Amino acid sequence: MTTFESLGLSPEILKAIEDLGFESPSEVQEQTIPILLEEPTDMVALAQTGTGKTAAFGFPLIQNIDLNSKKTQGLILSPTRELCMQITNELKQYAKYYQNLNTVAVYGGASITDQARQIKRGAQIIVATPGRMKDMIQRNIIDISNINICILDEADEMLNMGFFEDIKEILSHSSDQKNTWLFSATMPKEVSMIAKKFMKSPKEITVGQKNISTKSVSHEYFIVGGRDRYSAVKRVVDANPDIYAVIFCRTKRDTQKVAEKLIEDGYSASALHGDLSQAQRDMVMNSFRKKQIQMLVATDVAARGIDVDDITHVINYQLPDEIETYTHRSGRTGRAGKEGKSLVIVTKSEVRKIRQVEKIIGQKFTQEELPSGDEICKRQLFHLADEIKNTTINSEIDSFIPDLEAQFEDLSKEEIIKKFFSVEFTRFHNYYKNAPKITQHSADDSYSSGKDYGDETRFFINIGEKDGFNWMSLKDFLKEQLNLDRDGVAKVDVKNTFSFFNVPTDDVEKVQSTFDTFKLKGRHVNVEITKDQKSGSGGRKGGGGGRDRGDRKPRKRFDKNSSSDFKGKKSGGSSVKSSFERRRKKS
View (cartoon, rainbow, N blue to C red):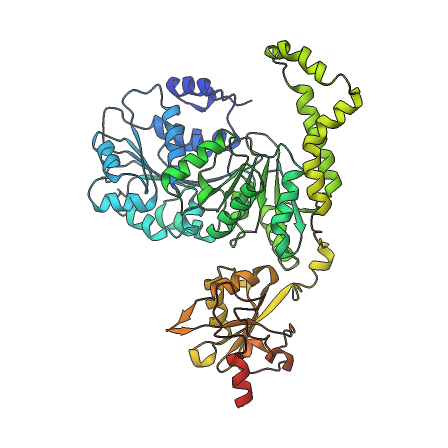
């Protein structure tokens, strides 16, 4: 069995490791540390989140620092503020027995003056987000011309977030003689590109296979209607009383909305997304780490700093736009040798994405049925029974026992038990007795040839060829405005002054809210659900191709008195016909 002593680490680091309670190195530490300590080299290391990557590059970095010099010698770039602070705190723990070694965190959302003051006092190691680092270099606050080591942590995520140009600009101020260590969970082509551009014959270390998910995490999915996502999450949560979870949403809006619903329903939850101030994000994360919050609802970007070993579940409220991001999400659970579950809520039209994820992570998903109300009530009841049975008795209650016994003396043991447990049981029983039914689908019904996904809604939109669109450019335009991946917009058919397109039915509300007040070159863009949902054919030929005439019959225009009105949209009167209908009569 490999030990930390056999890796060539210094006595100071070994003492810190002992204090931290680390018993043996992880696989990525075992493979990388000896190489990085042996001789100066560039390195690309691929390993999943939660496998000890920070220590894998942190130990060798600390041991390579010249303590007699206060110049900046090591730079670590990370994608988010949370991860930046996390790495800084861990490095300080690793270097606690090194005197005069200063590590400074540099990130946006905090006082640049305070950070500049810390840098001026001497910072041999700087941990930074790309944006703030670039800013401080341009202000001549930080000099990285003499760094010996640059570490790109979570490189794939930094590139997904659009930091390539910032990284290129930052590294242009550093020495060509430095060594670059790139650590990443996945290896998309963009990471390969950055390795080729900034590194010289790097050593390559892969723990497991590229992009493969850890075996300690099981992957399950539930197929429900788009409107049932939240109800499905609620059932999963209720069926797991001890759940300690991160719930991932694609957008900040959905993140806030889901968190607010959970709080309204009495759950201990909070949102974590980019619209929160740094102080708010710190408070939320601190509460989550202390388990004062049971469920953290987060966007992918905000969650990059989450480093908690005891997370039992990751719940994908929606799958990410970039399928590779799923690896990062599922890596939040099943850490430090513990088992975890990654659950995905999908609609029929999204099952094809499950197949894509399976190929990337190298594991199969199992389709599960949501638990029934009766099953949930039973689980909650026996969870409460276990809690009571295992509770340590507080002897301070002894003085009250005679009065309590007197209060219950006219009740039998069975009646006391029934009354006691009914306090909690009745709440769940009453809710699920009247809870709306959730329609669930089988994967066989949802995934056939890959060409027809069924659960889609067709829209009319009042822009077309006259506005400079063909089917491809309109698809890209819609994808960008709706924040959907390319497969999220389908069957685009462009006419002269109007067009049609399909989206998964669960994205209907997103389409309506996005284009509620949207204007293109000063003109209001109108979208309406068509009466006939047939897709027709020939959409890729722009204005050509056959089309079922039913496609050209949109629903009555949504007006302010209609129950299906767009939220906040003013129609100008309930009797006004759609502009599309008026054009048809003229023609």
